[in-house]
Length: 302
Image 1 (cartoon, rainbow, N blue to C red):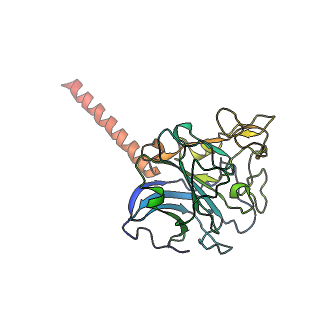
Image 2: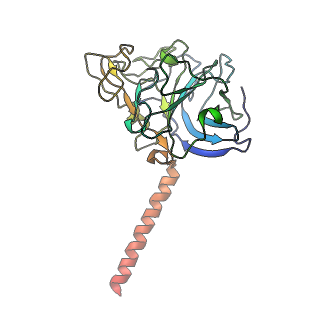
Image 3: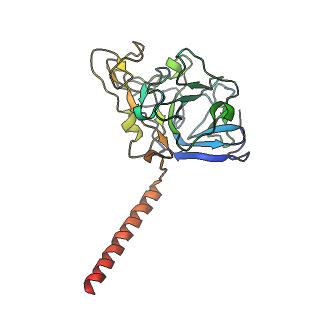
């Protein structure tokens, strides 16, 4: 499905953030499956934006590459996208609805709404109150590829989601779609195979997420996705207290899943500074110091 060009329809930008390029390696060690269909950049998120028009909320996710080798009607096949949204302060969940990503969420910012984009009719929305067996809402939701060929758009009726507020925070997770994988996630294993990622911790406790929306330095992706722990003797746990949220579904030795933090207009992580911007700020700081020194020197001579 090829959608209109970006910005059609009088859309209003609510939130936007760039994501560092070339970081589609999970906690830093992951490599792509070896089958030739997995071209470089498929899972490399480059940016995320939330836009609103008169009828819909649009989530736009840019990638280095988008392909559709098996002709999914959405126009993309490989990406599995989960957007967890904290809409209500003091509410929500700190574990995913299902264990596929093998992560947990900041207790201060529990998620209230999950939006998933996946091929072959897998796009849907769910609430934190849903059970793991609830299929979620699909009616009225659409996903497709914008005319630039590298932006996946997920659209939800305003009547269903509501108008995005400046206080909302977002967790954006990118995995590989696997129709036979746990919760649709393509597995990450110690050694890559034609159909699984490689470079994962041998315990299996690491995330099955390849990229997340995160800043380059503070709370970087590698730091967040690499925050899982392993302790011999049991199954990995999904919460900070050590309770095994997912029973024995995860094939791991033990530990806690990686802890993720959201981005949003009121969090430091949301500041989309590029390298040139940081350099410019540094230059301004040096100029300010020089001016201050000159003023102090002039006062000393007077």
